[in-house]
Image 1 (cartoon, rainbow, N blue to C red):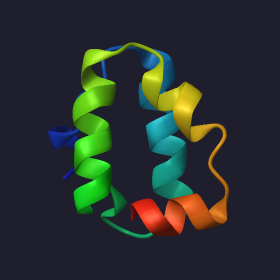
Image 2 (image 1 turned 30 degrees about the vertical axis):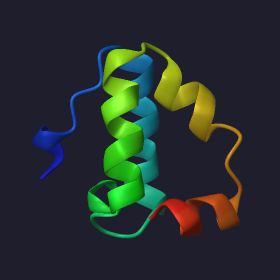
Image 3 (image 1 turned 120 degrees about the vertical axis):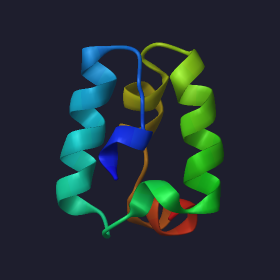
Length: 63
């Protein structure tokens, strides 16, 4: 359910959508991602800036 993720700026929404193509289904529902997305909702550019530095191991840990 993509509509449950509300990011404030287009660049963050685009990055999130692209991650939806490469990460496991429902990646945004993982507990660590839920906490991360709560912070990203409040801070423009946070999602894009933070995730741009994540490697595969970080993604696995978060999801």
